[in-house]
Every structure is written in C-alpha cells, then in structure tokens.
Amino acid sequence: MSMGMKIKDILTDGFDVNGDIEKNISGIAYDSRSVKGGDMFAAVKGENFDGHAFIEDAIKKGAKAVIYERKAIGDRQEAIKKYPDVVWIGVEDGRDALAAVSHRFYGRPSEALIVVGITGTNGKTTTSYLIKSILERWGKDAGLIGTISYLIKDAAYEARHTTPEAPDFQSLLREMADKGCSHVVTEVSSHALSQKRVDCTKFKVAVFTNLTRDHLDFHHTMEDYCAAKVRLFAELLTKDGIAVINTDDPYGKKLSDDLKGQWSGNKDQGKKILTYAIDDQNADIVAYDIKTTFKGTSFKIRIKGKEEIGEEINSPLVGIINVYNMLSSIGAALSMDAPVKTIKEGIAMTGLVKGRFEKVDLGQDFLAVVDYAHTEDALERLLATARQLMGAYRFAQKTEKMMKAKRQQYAVPGRRDEKREVGKIITVFGCGGNRDKGKRSKMGEIAAKMSDFVIITSDNPRDESPRAIIRDIEKGIAGDNYIVIPDRNVAIGMAVELASSGDIVLVAGKGHEDYQEIEGKRYSFSDRTALESAIRRAIDRPSFGGGTNYRGTETVRC
Image 1 (tube, helix red, strand yellow):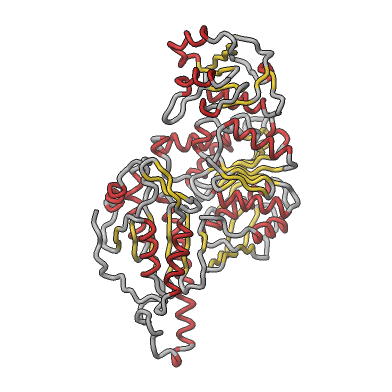
Image 2: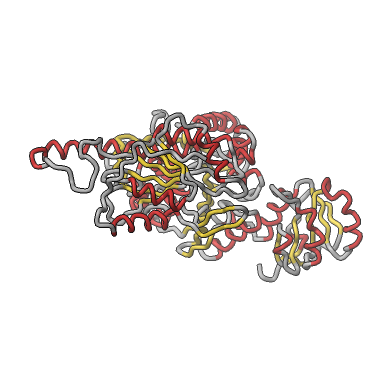
C-alpha cells in the first residue's frame, strides 16, 4: 500500500469523474487538517462541520483528488475550474463513497478475515474481550477494535473512537490481516452505522446485546437509534453470516422475529440466527443456575439441539450484566464452530475489563467498583448487580453471625453499630454535558431508588454548567438520600469516607476514561486513580474502618 493505488482502481459505479484517473493516490483523508501530499480528500458532512467548506484547504495541502457530493458543491463550481489538475469525483452520498474507496484502497481486507461485529447500547466492550479470549484459547490470532483500545494480537494502540472512520477502520483491518490475524472482533457503534464507517466490510458474525435510551442527541428518536443498529444485520452481514441476538431484550426479540421473516423466504441467503437469554426459555442458548458473588460468577447453559452442559461456566466477572455478556460471547463462538470446552476455558481466562465493573481492591473491607455505566439502563443494571451481590453478602454474614453469636458480643472499635443492617450501596455518578438531557432525571431517580446513598457529581460537563447538569439530575429524585459535590475527586473521596465494612462503593459514568472534559478542554482524570488514592488515605489513618454516619448529612443544593 505504500506505493499508492491508481484512482481508477478504487472507483465504483455512480461516480462522475473529471480528471486523469490513471493518477496514483497515496492515502485517503476525510479531515483537511490531516491531508498529506498525494492524498484523496473526501468531503463529508460531520456533526459540527461540512467537509465541503475545506476542499480548497485540502488541495493547498497537496490533495490530488477530491470526492464531493453533487448536491453540496453548489457555488464551489469555481473551485473545480480553478484546480484543473485535481481529479474531481462527484457522488450522491459522500459517506457511501468514502466507505467504498477505503475498502478498495486497502485491498478489501475483511474478505481475508472473519470479522465479528458487536452492537448494542451496553455490553459491547466486555463481550469483545470475551470473544477475543475464546478465539485465542482456540489457537487463533485475533485483533480487536473497540472503545478502550485497538489490539493487534497482543499489541495495544490508543482508541480514538469506538468505531473509527472508514479509512482508519479499513486500514486497521489491513494491518491486522498483514500481521497474521485470522479473526477480528469489533465494537460497532450506532454513530458508525449511521455514518457508514463500516460499510463494505464483510461481517461473518453480528451480535446484538441490547437497546436502551442513549445518544438521542444524535439520533433524536429511539426508532432512528434502533434503525442504525439494525443495519449491521440487515445490510452488512454476509450471505452465510450468523446473527447472535439477545431475546430477553424487547428490541432484540423484535429484531430476531423480523430477520426470521425476511430471511426465511429468501432461498439465496444462508444467514442464520442464534438467540440467547436468561428468561426466554425458547432461546437457542439459555443460562440457568446462576450464582454470583463478590469474587465472580458461575452458571450452566442449555444449548438447543445439544445435550445440557453439566459443568459450570466460571468467570471472575461479576453479576447478571456479565452473564448476558458471556452468553453473547458463547453465541458468537458457537457460530464460528468453537468447541464448548474451549469456550468455557476462554471465558474463565478473561480478566476484569478496564472500567467495566472493575474492582479496586487495596485490602479495604468494602467493595469498590468503577463502571462505565452512563445511561439509565446501564446504571440500573449496575445497581441491580450490586443489590444482588449485597443480598448474597448479607445472607453469608447473617449465617456467620448466627454461628458465632456467643463470641460476638461487642462491636469492632471505630465502626458503626454492629446492629445496623450489613452492607450499604453508596453511588457516585453524574451526567455528561452536550448530550441527551432527557436521561438525566431518570438516572437520578434510578440512583436514589436503588442506592442507599448517592453523591451527585460532575462527569464530562463539556460546554455546559456542571451545576445546571446536576440540577437536571436532581429533578428525578424524590427523597433526601443524596448530597451534591460537583468536584468529582472530592465526591469519590467522600464516598470512601462514608464506607464501612461490607458496603459497596460504585463510581459510575466514566469507566476507563482518563480525562474530564470541561469547557472544551480535556484534563487528566481517572476514576480508578481517584478511588485508589482515597482508599489509601483511609487505610493509612489509624481509625480506618469507617464510623462516619451519613444518615442526616445535609444536602448541598445547587
């Protein structure tokens, strides 16, 4: 690819071309600021800017060819006349064209790979790591494209987007193929599907995790949001591909039913559907006998058409949330004919995923967790998991107390009254600025109802006032079991101060992110680092173990 490619070799039907198509181009750019001499520049419309306004900038930086939308060029006809040496390519849809030329320029890389695409509101990242672990246990070399990082075998690269723009995506696929990967697991965001970033990619397996309210600042309606996700299955899956779908999710159930109706009558397609669930007993893969503790999760699965698996699947991942993630990875692996034994071993080997129910354990006597939950559904699932764990913990503690009642006559010095109910859930969270405002009050309602105590703080306020965002969150809270601390570092520190033995401290919203975005600038900040520092400070104090009674704490109003 370093020698470039002739323009004529990457064109497709429907392009209006003015200029010498025998010319070579050395790369494809969609941002005029990144254009290098010899590149092709594709003018596409983004959320904030229209690339057509920067065509001349791209040419001045050395672009040899320009893709433009015929309907958008308008008064820029003079530019076409002004630069006769540039190859001008008129198209109907700039993003269609960008995907097509990128796919061709990088040598149709997905055709040399087995590509697994995962879409849904929650669970994409953890599912991707589970599938990669299974593949590697199976002896396959796998790449991963996702929110946290891009992985080529064991080499990691920083991820700038959950799903990169078309040229970057195809370039990654090409690099993975060239370096010996046989499989690629990729998260596929709704933005990417709407903006056609992964179009022309041949997906052999497509996974649907769930669909709940998110990104409505971009999609505007749930119908549009859902339609974007459906594209992966209806348009981008290969003719012999397999759709793996969660039918406990109402959108997943409808998707499964719709696809069955469409594909059953088409004799030219060999597409198949593999469903998974906990509640839907008609699903192809069903989890049952689920056991989850602070230390991990185990369950059994029933696979339609196969004998029941008697041995438990074990994982260090915690909660019902991760049972669904493991089921989706099992479905994807089965669709690629991976042996069940290998699947179980791959799941067991998958460690905690950064920022996804990530436990922070420095020896403290309470559970501390960092999680990426930043939607109402994700927060509800996170808190439901915490409640489930707390229930198991309380049962174990009560049993232990009954056995040792005669020897436990006094409370441990420096701790709250031992007669209190064992274990409280303390949640720290906020909402991002310049994003869907409708979810803020709903997240406040969920947090207050499902937590024993809540600390509302800032997330990534971006260009909005942190206090205005917090006021929106407060609108959903009916009780007084919360305080407001806008400084996120201080809020996390307070949560640790309030924690006693057996409590759960949840820090939600940012997960793996290592920054806060305030007034257009990014500042270094990590929830995990802040939580670790707070726990260390608490451990270093002679009175470590709590004792601060948060009941009746005055609420700070904004």
